Structure formats: C-alpha cells, structure tokens
Length: 104
Image (tube, rainbow, N blue to C red; front, side):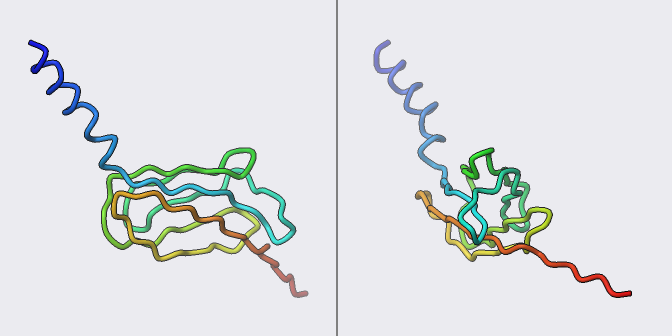
C-alpha cells in the first residue's frame, strides 16, 4: 500500500516539474514599475498581467522557441525571442512611452 501511495504522489507532482517559469518586473525609462502590463506568448493562449508592483510570473507547459510580448496602453510593445525548455527565465523589460503626435 505504501508503494501505491508513493507512486500516486509522484504522478501528481510531476506536472509541477514539467513547467517553464518566466518572471521579472516591468518598468519604464525612469525606473517606475508599470502595473497591468499584458504579457503573453505569441500564438498561444498563455499569458498574465503585471501586478501593482510591476512584477509578473508566467508558468507554462509550452516548450520550444516563442516570442514573449509585453503590451500596455501608453507604452510601445516590446518583444523577446525566448527558448522554453522547462527552466526559469528572468526578463525585466523597460518599456518606452508611446508618444502620439496630433496634427492640425
């Protein structure tokens, strides 16, 4: 019975180890954190948003090369090519303000 319980626990815990984690903090050029930034893997439904302190954590089962996109109103989008191979990546983007010029 102990062997059966141990086997079941190993099966339940394995998916936790099969994930890649992307984490970091999003800031602007002045070093101020940006909350509510949309962060996602292009071509998938995997994504998250930055917290009030600009931090984020994105855990995914995806594997391979992807484009990680950071988007927020008032800022230019930023893209990073990343390779997911069941490890932890730390990406700390600095977003530039989007300046919209109005012409008369």
